[in-house]
Amino acid sequence: MLLNNGQTVIVGSDRDVLEVIGENFSYELAEYIDQILWNQEALDKYMRDIEKAIKNGDKQAQLTKDIFINRIVRYIGAYMTEMGGLDVLVFTAGIGEHDASVRKQIMDGLTWLGLEYDEEANKANHEGVITTPNSKITAMIVPTNEELMIARDVVRLAKLDKLNK
Image 1 (cartoon, rainbow, N blue to C red):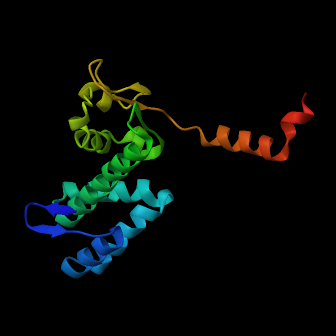
Image 2 (image 1 turned 90 degrees about the vertical axis):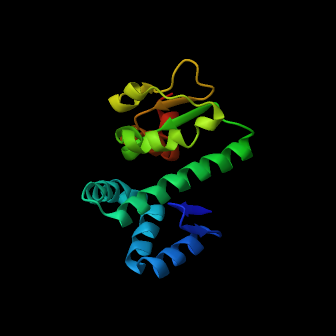
């Protein structure tokens, strides 16, 4: 369900939501949201564009960001159900490492679980814990190192690690 300023209630799958957005706002916006939700490589660029548009008062851009945040919080809730709880929430990669406002909005959606974030630690964008000592869930920023992961996968897949033993 999506509630937009108390005016619009949408119930259904993510694709249904995109269809309603297309019908009520614009199909271009719906396509843009769809690309954001399903294309990780473009996500960082889109979020920069969205933030710029929000600063210029673009309500569709704000709706796009709200939907993005809502979807992340929903996925966290779904995975929590599958796993039987949540001990640590890790923010990583481009947006997770570098966008304090997105992290804040996600964590705001989880405060009912006892997550208490440290506003200054979150804004600092540094590796480490960004929740208070009293938080029931730990949230952290962990930088990615894609080059190292790719190198490890190459070694593992090529079985080069066995040659060095």
